[in-house]
Image (cartoon, rainbow, N blue to C red; front, side, top):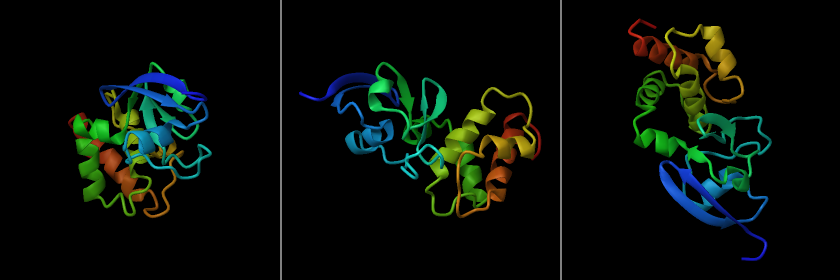
Length: 162
């Protein structure tokens, strides 16, 4: 295929082979070519966090990374992490605390919160939670409920109280 580049990556545990335009953002590849629409496109400038996803275990902005840059990488989206139940307690807490309203920022918030809570042996301070999610814009909740949900999950994961 003229003008395209062949890529191979693992998305949510499955090998994916595709031919893509060199300038195609990874988030657009996931949404348009693979039908993984849980990751959203917000600002398209890497500012809002709606396009957050994991590449090789790190949360990145899918609008700033090209699909060709993900060649050989392991990519995890909200759908993949949800299927593995890796986010179940966070999703439940977000629901119970009404930490999601329109849902546009939720995928990015969940992935960012999960990154903060991985392999921790202590509950992060509320200020640390706020700092960690600060790159994810939410226009609906005012963040208080999101911080409450993340703090509760952190405490529950290490056996304490929120």
